[in-house]
Structure formats: C-alpha cells, structure tokens
Image (cartoon, rainbow, N blue to C red; front, top):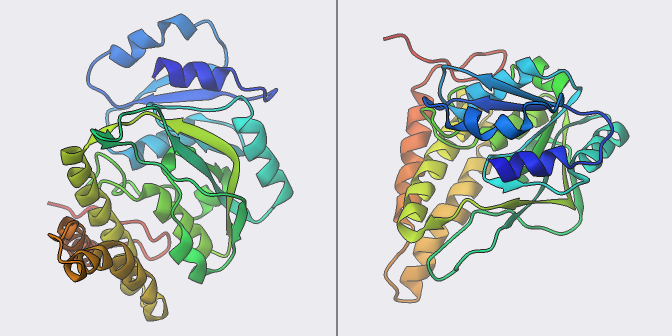
Amino acid sequence: MVDTVLSILANTHSNFELVVVDQSKDNETLEALKPFRTDPRLRYVKIGTIGKGNALNAGLTETRGSVIAITDDDCTVPPKWLEEFASIFSTHLKVAVAFCVVEAGEHDPTAGFIPDYVFTGERMLTTVHDARHVRGLGAGIAVRRNVVEEIGRFDPMLGPGSRFPSCDDRDIAMRALLAGYHVYETSKIAVKHFGFRNWQQGRQLAHRDFLAIGAAYSKFLKFGRVDLMYIPAHEFIKYALWPVVRDLLHLRRPRGIVRITAFAEGFLGGLHTPVDRETMLFVEQQK
C-alpha cells in the first residue's frame, strides 16, 4: 500500500488527485497513510460496503477528474502513468476504457506466480464483437468518467469480495463496447504487480476468475444477444476446456478442470440473477 501511494504521488502529471478507498474493518490502512496526510493531493475514504465494484463506484463519487486511472494496493505505477493515460483519452474521444501492461514483480517462479497481462504495441477495440479480445486487468485500467456514469458505473456484484468475485474490469469494457464506445490497450505504460500466489492459491484464483467470467458473459444471453454467444463459447473452449483436452491428448493428468466447473457454475448463477435492462448491471435479489 505505501509503495503504491509513493509511486502514484511521484507521477509527473501537473494536476491530479489520489483517492484511497478503504473497505477494511481495522485502521491499518489509515495508519499506513499517516506519512502522507499533509499532501493535498491525497484523500482517504472509508466505506462500509464490501466488494471491489462498490469500492470503484465510491472512488468515482469522490473524484472530480474526467479520466480516472485505477490500480490495486499491491502494485506500483511508473512516473508517466497518468500522463500516458490522459494522452490516450484526449487523442481518442470515443475511448471509454483503456488498459496498460501489468508486469509481474520479482518472485520465485518455482513457488508460484503473479498474475500479469503483457503485450506489445497499441490496439483499439471498436465493436461488440471485439469483446472476445478484452483481457486487460483492473490493476492497470483507466476510464472516462462521463461514459462510465452513462452506462451505470461498475457492477457491484462483480469483483473481489462480491458474489461473482472477479471480472469487474472485463465487464466495464464489454458494456462500453455494447454502448458504442471503444476500448484501447497500450504497452507504453507498465504497472508492476506484487500479488504473489502459491500454486494452491492459483487454483483458488482460477475458480474465482472463471466463476465471475461465466456470470458476466451470461448477460449476453439474458439480453437476447444470441449473436454474441460465440464470445463466451470462445472463452470457455480456449481457456477452460482446451487445456484439459490438451493434457489428455498428451496422456497427462488433466489440469484446470476447476475452470470448466467454475465457468459453468458462474454462467448458470448469472442466468438466475436479475439484470437491470438499461445498465446491464446485476441486481441483488431481495431475501
């Protein structure tokens, strides 16, 4: 957390604010931020709700800028992080969401891994069919405020701590594409991620991610977009089913079956969860 704040405050952009949204039950984050309390650019917000979607929406409420750059508390950002993102949005007026590279920090690859998203070059996604290419991570994302407000903000039921505990990043990009806006990817910016997982945690992460991915993609079917159902089919076959088939073909013990079961569980869970017709946000059922 401290390293994250230090790296953001070291950015070269001439005009920015940093809002830290805290959902913890203790005061550890508040205590960690004490060395920065005299910096007028920093604002601390404590909220009582849980789930990353709620935290992101609280951040939208508290900030004033037209472009909101977002990262996680186990990441550091480069000095020109904000300048590069701001340049994308000022140059490409239809871009609603932008992703950057997320590099894995130093770690022992024999003991586990750090989730990353690495690519080279620049890419613009412009149609709903490009939703199958959305793979960016929420640790390196920026959004255009007025568009996110227009399409209903982030889905409170997606993201860590929520019912469907991931895919908040992919969902906002897909909904922006469905609304006629563009998604941009750049390798000019690289956030460094230090969220190490051992192999057991990796299996838990796979379950979490594919549960939420299945739920998010179920929205296409709930809205009658049968023409887009090849997108979740592509996701399921390439990233969940094929790795298992490949292991079987090579006479290896199949790995990744958890992805298949989690995707199916999430897709069915999404189908049984109400969705707002205007915003494509999941609606929590009343008990």
